[in-house]
Each structure stands twice: as structure tokens, then as C-alpha cells.
Amino acid sequence: MENRKLSNTQFIKEVLGICLSAPKKLKKGLIICCVCIGISTLFSALIPVISGYVLNSLKDSISQNVLTGILLLWTFFYVLSGKIGLLFDEIVDSFSQVVYQRYNVLFRLKKIASVFNMPAIVASSEFRQNMVASIPRLGSLGENTIYSFIWNIFWQAGFVFSYITLFCIAPVYSLIILAISIFQAYFTLWINNRLKEKSEALVNYEKDNNTSQQDALENLQNIRMLGIHNQVMNELNDKHEHYFYDFQSYQIKQIFFSLIPNTVSLLSQCILIYMAVQIAFEKQDIGLYVMLSGLSMDVLRKVDAVINRYKWLHNYGIQYLTLNKELQYDTSLMPKSGKGKLSTIKEIALEKVCFTYPEEKSPVLNNLSLKIKAGSRVAIIGNSGMGKSTLINVMQHAYEIQSGKVLYNGKNVQTISRESLRDNLTYIDQHPTFWSQKTIKENLLMFNPKATDAELYQALRSANLLDEITQKERGIDSKVTTLSAGQKQRLSLARALLRHTPLIIMDEPTANLDTHAQTKVLEGIKNLSKVKGQKPTVIFASNVPAEIASANRILLLENGQIVEDGTPKKLMTNERSKTYKRLKKYKALFMD
Image 1 (tube, rainbow, N blue to C red):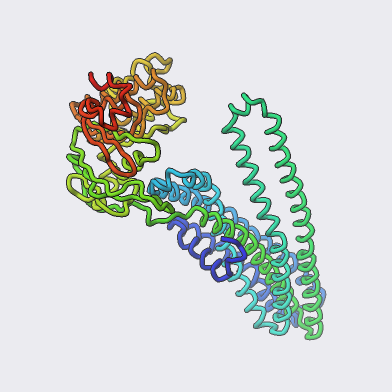
Image 2: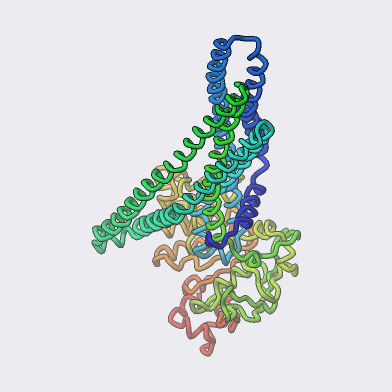
């Protein structure tokens, strides 16, 4: 969304949408802010009027000297009341920051929750990383947009109240103030637009610098080994020098430009005070001077506040809308969720399933059908890009298919609630992730908070990991970061065992491990059926011969279709079989 394409009407509509999406927990805070703003408005707007009427009522009954003293006292009191008004403004400002910081936190949590429900097609891409990285910034921009918007509305209301009061007292004088206010607003916004492009360029520079630093840290080992760290540091330094000089230039221009409207505002106040004095002398009405000078200063102060708040609103709002649009995805990709329940999984069936990735022409799965009964151990094999990972994602309803049906116990998966389906299956990725700040025990308990120590140790034993963990100084209370890649893979098996689900789906669980680690993980996979006497259905995509040999059924996938389906022994004793031709070097593994 480019800034020049966003009309004022669209901008206001979008900003209103942000404000309306604010959590209900902000309402009490907003009420307190409104009360404080109301008190501030009364101090700044009504005191000049009341003071003027009091002076008018006293001017005929007291001497000139006493009247002068009262006027001086009023001036002091007005300044003091203005400070009191500013105190309430500061209270609102501080309290608002707390209120909208709460919005920021709630917004981030809401966005993170939306990431969990994100379609797998989106979640498995770079988009997810961008979204997660942008959530803190998006939350902060949303918070500041609402904060500036509400304050802008408050100050506009205060301006209208003070201006109407002034208009009732001196219509012509008030029209002159309105003309000055409009000129000041136009001039300030013109300056803001002049600085906007530079501001956006700085934001892009900063983002580019952060990305460069992140790339350098992620490739730290390669940079060390290649000996190009000086080259990388020079490049980073050049980027930061460029950013620094541009930032310095921007700040100087900002100071220079801010002097102009401040000077205009000061001259306007001097002119208005002079006019108020002239009017008061002409009408011989000292009370009128008090009213005009006090109200005109209050109106101009509120004009400054409205303009400044709009500048921040425009700045934060544009950044929020631009970033938020970058993070929008096609919601039609969301898998459909029903209200049905699953108590267990007796059979999985796919009927004429077709699936094509967005913006792709050829289907990855093409009219594919199969049935898998409970207790089966199914290996899905095939060349890279043939749809193995896609098939297991379709099976667990991570992707929404274009045609066909995915059935659990004869029920269309679209009619089963997402929560019920997830309660009945466990997915193990080839790159399992863990909470790095937590211990091994805490990571296990995340998958079953009610598990006893005995159950934790049994799961680790079945995953062929217990002995290695007990040898550590802190045992199960060691940090998960102390584990190797192979140990982490087996820990993911232990987590699966703790869930006691009737279905376990794995995507190449030993693909990135050495032979020793593969052997350990395979022993753990074989033990998956030994917990509490259960025999879960295990489905995994793999091209590792030893892993495939542990299955009791093999599905060979080519061009989106299953071209071979049978037991390992059947396929590996048929020399015309494509599976045999793929795995004949490892025939001995399948004959045990």
C-alpha cells in the first residue's frame, strides 16, 4: 500500500478500524482519560470567561490600583491554572501510555494466536518468519496509532469547545483566530509532508541494516571459516555510516522546519494579545481582555496539539497500514473446521484428492485415493518434489484440498473440529523445535502437563534417550540446548509418546542425522507402539532405507499419485517393482 495511493477517506476508515479492534480492557482507561481531559479543558477554557465576568462586576466598585492588582493576580492565577491544566494533560499522557501499552501486549498475543491458526502453506514459508518478527513492531505501531487518534479527537473536542465560547464573545476576533489556525495547520502539514519521504527512507535503511546484521550472525561460522569477517564488518560499517549521516541530516531539517511553525505560533499569539488589548481599550472593558487573551491562547494551544497529534497519527498510521498489508494472506487457504468430535482414529481414507499450491499450475496430488487402517506403520517414499510432505500435510488437514475428500472414521475432516483432530494426532517434523530457555523436563511437560516423573522417564526410555540424559550433571533438569540434533529428534519422539495419540505423523525424522543418530532414532520409532500397550498408527515420509524397512506398508508416490502400494517383503521380492529398483542395494534390511 503506497502512501500516495491512500486517500484521506481511506486512511480515516482504516484508522477507525484499528481503534474499533482495540480490546475492551481499554474502556476504563479511556474513561479516566476523558475525565482528566475534561478537567483540563475546564481549567483552560472556562477560567478566562469566569475571571472576565468577575472583573467586570468589580470594576465600578473598586479603585484602579486595586483593579490593576487583581489583574496581575489573575494573570498569575491564569498561568497557575494553565499549569494545573497541563498537569492533568501529563496525567492523561502518562496514564494513556500505560493503557495503550496494555493494548500493545494484548494485540501481540492476539496476533501470535492468529499465527497458530495460520494455514500451513503460509506457516511453512518465509511469510511466517516475517510475521513473527514484525508482531512487536506492528503492536507498537497499532498502539501509537490508537493513542494518537484518541488524543487527536480529545484535542479537537477541546478546541471546538473553547472556540465556540470565544465565538460567542467576539465573533470577528474568533474568525481571525480561525484563519490563523488554518494557516498554521496547513503550513505545519506541508512541512510534515516534506519530511515524510526522508523519514520513510530512514525506516527502510534501519530495516536493511537490521537484516544485514541478522544475516551476518546467521552465517557466522561460514564467515569465520572463509576469513571474510573484515569485508563483512566494512560493509556493515558503511551501511551504518550512511544511515547516520542521513539521520543527522533529517534531524537538522526537522529542527529547522520546527522553528518556522513555532515562530508563526509565537507571532500569532503576540498579534492576538495586541488585538485583545486594543479591543479592551476601545470598549473600556478589562474583563473582555481577560476573556479574549485567555481563550485565544487556549485555542491556539489546542490547534498546536491537534496538528502535532495528527502528524504522529499520520506517521504511525501509514507505517501500521503498510506493514499490516504486507502481512495479509489469502484466508481461503484456511482449512475448514467443523464441530464434530473424534474419540479415536480407526481408519484414514483419501478419496480422489487433488491439491495444487497457490500460483502453481500443476497439481502436486492428482486424483489420489488410499485407505490406512489403525495400527499400520506406513512409509511414503518418492523422489524430492513428488508430494510426500504435501500428502502427509493433507492427511492431517494442514492444507485445504481443492477437490476430493479426506475421511477419518468415515467422517469428512472438514466436519471435525480442529481441536479434536489435533488431540488425536501428533506431528513430528524433521527439524523439531523446542523452548530453548526451558529444561528437558519442561519441554516434555509442555506436551502433557499432567505427566508424572515415571511417565516422563518411560517416554525417554522408549525413545532410546533415557541413559544419555541421566548421565548429564542435572539429568532431566538440564537445558534442552545441551542436546545434539539426534538427541533432540528422539526427544521429539518422547514428546509424541507422552501425548498418547492414536496417530503419529512424521516428515523424514532421520533425514539430517548421521548413521549412529539414525540408528538411535529408529530404535525409538520402533518403540512407539510399546507405550501402555497401545499400537498407534504411524505414517512417515522418508527416503532412508533403514527407516522404510521399519514400516509394514510402503507407498511409492510419483507425479501426485500412488504408483505402488504393498508390504516391504512383497515389493522387495518383486524385481520388476519400482520400489525394488530404488532400494535393491538395501534388500537385506527388508528380509529380516
